[in-house]
Image (cartoon, rainbow, N blue to C red; front, side, top):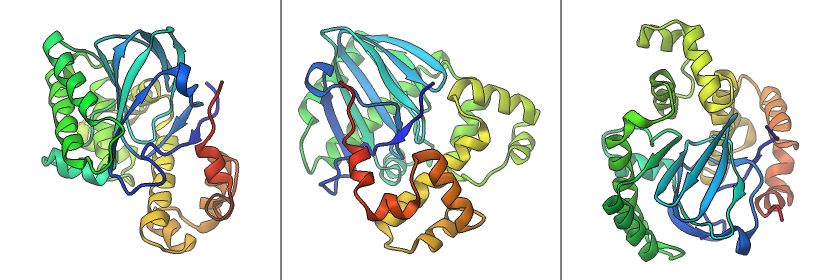
Length: 271
């Protein structure tokens, strides 16, 4: 698995909280393996593709819906010449409001949609794509996607312990394995093993990545200092935050926020 970089899902020049993109590799090229704070779904409108999700490769074709959790590595590996898909992502705070029950966004999965469900989502995506000020239509689309996902939850490739762990981390990224083991009444080693297999990161690596993404969110929205953002994101010290940043993104926090590196990283496309 290649190194992943940070590339936000939402348009950088707008204040959108949700967005639907249309994508063909011929027109856009391919993003490198990346992750972001926004949960994302890809609706395959035509063609075939293979996606790398953590250590796993998933094959998808017309009529499939693919999901990626916040912080989850993903990359388009191979695509047929006629591949066309819609990608929808949403700010986690808005997602929580839309889902109302406080549940986390759906975890990585591949769902084969029934023909009527596929057509309904395709129509919604087509009417929403690439438009500004579309939070309400996106919210309706998001709610429908999650309803379908829960209806088909039994076919998720994820172990139930992984799904429950991701749901807990979405709301409490500071939670530890021992606490989860107590809540789930399952051995910590079993939780850790399934999580690593399903997500492609160890539990500790994924939790650290969520802290990093929270720090980026705080710097973008709260106008706080790096020191304060590091403390609020549960890093033990700014030096620890600096080490994590350097290891994950290949640059220091100050370079990321106060130079052109972040913009350059956002614009990277593979041929």
